Amino acid sequence: MTFLRSLSRLPLSLWLRGFVVAIGVIAMLAFGLAIVAAAVVAVAIGVLVYKTRDWFSGMARPRRTVPVRVPATRTRVSDADYTIIDRR
Image 1 (spheres, rainbow, N blue to C red):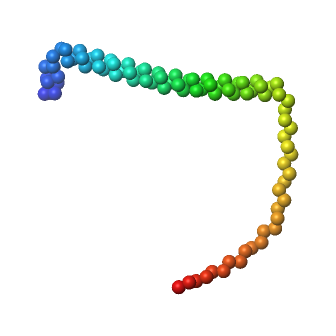
Image 2: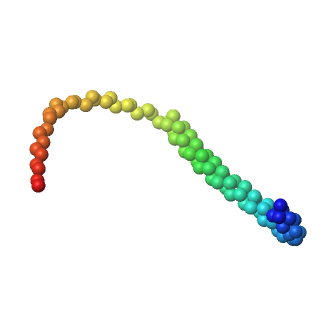
């Protein structure tokens, strides 16, 4: 209760300054988030333009044939002998 009483005794100029600062902080937060959102949208549009351009140019090019994969030949695997050397 004493905290609220001390707040009520503050001068009007201090309340007005606090109100202006609060509005400024809220505006800067909103502006900062808007800048981040605009950057994300710009990157997304750039990626979409690049992909669309690649897709349209791919429609005009002749298709490349897909090479046939030759199955890998399996060579015989032999067991290896290991010698343990105990040095003390």
